Figure 1 (tube, one colour):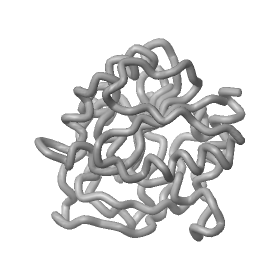
Figure 2 (figure 1 turned 135 degrees about the vertical axis):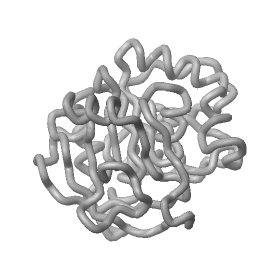
Figure 3 (figure 1 turned 120 degrees about the vertical axis):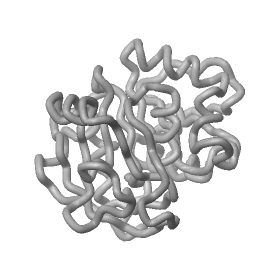
Figure 4 (figure 1 turned 45 degrees about the vertical axis):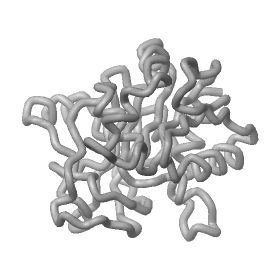
Length: 222
C-alpha cells in the first residue's frame, strides 16, 4: 500500500502519520506540501491533524482551498481512500467531501486526553479488523471537535452505516451530536474522525488500539 500525507502550514501530526504508516506498512509515505497541485499515485491520502493556517477563519477552511485539495477531491471522487484525522476531518467537511461541520467544543475548552470509543461500523475498508461494538481508546486534542449536522443528514448517516466511531457513553469530550466521532462518505472511501489513531499505534505510546485501522487499510488496499 502506497500512501501520501498532505502537509499544511502548522500541521503538527504529519510526522506522526508518517511514522505510523512507515512502521505498519513498511513503506514511507509521500509527504506532499499543500502548494503542490498533484498527489503522487497512491492508495491512501492522509490529511493529518494540526492547526492548518493557524485555524484562522474556521478550522480547516483555508486548508480546504489549498491547491492540493483540488487533486485530493479528484482522487477521492475516483475512489482513492482518504483519511482525515482531527484537523483533517475539519478540512474534509470544509471541502464538502464529508457532510456536517465541526463546531467549538461544548465546554468551550481545548480537550487533550485519551477517550473511549465504540466501533459503530466494522464493514468498511478502515475498520474491517475491528469487531462491531468493540471498545477502543484513542487520544483527542482539539478545541473544535463538536460534530453537528441537520437531522436528515444524521438519519442518512445512521441508516447507511456511515457512522464509524462513537464516543463511548459518558466519554463524549466535545458535545458531538449522537456521540459521533467519525463518519464515512457516500462512497465509503473517505473517513473523517476527530480522535487520533496514529497516536495509538505503538506500545510506547500506551495504546495500540489504532493499529487495526491502518492494518485494515493495508489488507484492503494492497
